[in-house]
Amino acid sequence: MNKKQRNSNIVYSTDPDFVYDDENEIVETPEPARQKLTIRLDRKQRRGKQVTLIEGFTGSDDDLKALSKILKTKCGVGGSAKDGVIIIQGDFRKKAEQILSDMGYKCKISGA
Image (cartoon, rainbow, N blue to C red; front, side, top):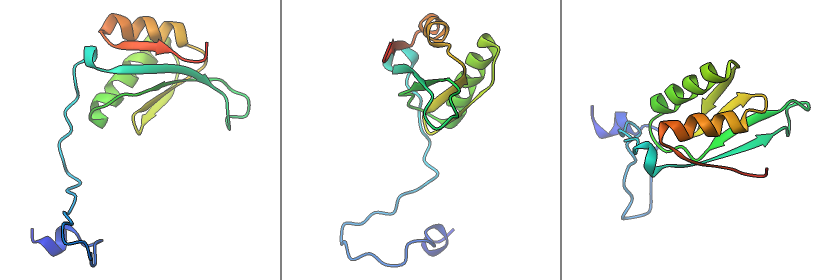
């Protein structure tokens, strides 16, 4: 694959030190003990419904979705995971903190 095909959205740059970002980088997920997760309750722009947000996850999207699936299964509810944030439907702050602590994550409940 040549340079033009790989970066077809970049037309021109006046910066002499410009480096093309390679979007297919492999992101390594640090072990659970090296991650600090924040758990908080949110109901903004959700028509009054409560959701538990788990923020601060660093790593690949596959690992984020796997962690999200574990949490949703153990809590018995639905949710989603994107952009490093896990959304769980309902107020499951204490249960999520217990599950994450048992898995080895450092987590803190914010706004309690």
